[in-house]
Image (cartoon, rainbow, N blue to C red):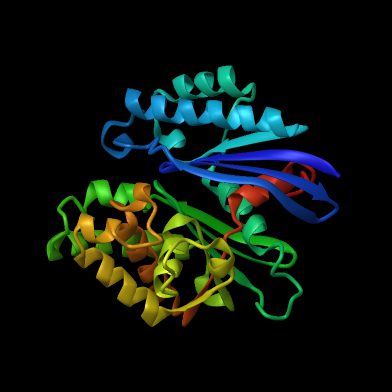
Length: 311
């Protein structure tokens, strides 16, 4: 058995998984998430803001302490959409290295997609409950990854810039957003999904798997949970109608109404409408009747990659 630590730094959140790996089995020791909004303003300025870097570095220090305390033998940190886009990303990379002792790997959209696919589908394979091929949709803060694959691995992948933070900053600026803003976001999302579909044939999939905080929060709301409950959310099935209704409801609410929802993380209050809209438009474009929600995602893929380089 080997203890590993995986870190995923996206546009909105910074997450840590410390796991014991025994063969193909992952056993969680620590799974944490903090909203750091590293990518705040990157879509407009092309640079990380000083305040965003400070927020991120504080959480990196906390995670570094946890990794040392739990004795992880191998550590890998992956940075995704915002870091790919930021002109001053070296400032971020150097700051993490000095605190964590590991240089974050700025992965391509394709590699991000492949890691997400492995993390999300590994435990679905061979169960008979979730037929392949799988279409994995990972809705992040800056980008959304689409992956098609089966038990043999990834067939096709594409990353497009329609994350929940990016869409909110670009289009959904009022509280709540007006019809024209929602229409502009919808058009942007639809164009990006159509672009992704030129590489990833969504129609070939038999199971749609949705990942990341926007999807899991929508699931919590559809399920009527009074508070966020990962065990209830993991592998929940949401119908297309439930997703569409929830997205419309969130986009019609003001900030105070969204913040009062029991499962809502404070760091997602301002961007959840955009994230729900992305999921809704993906399901419409692919003709999916339902989405299977996974709490396991790129973090689990990163953890497996530390022992299984083929992934």
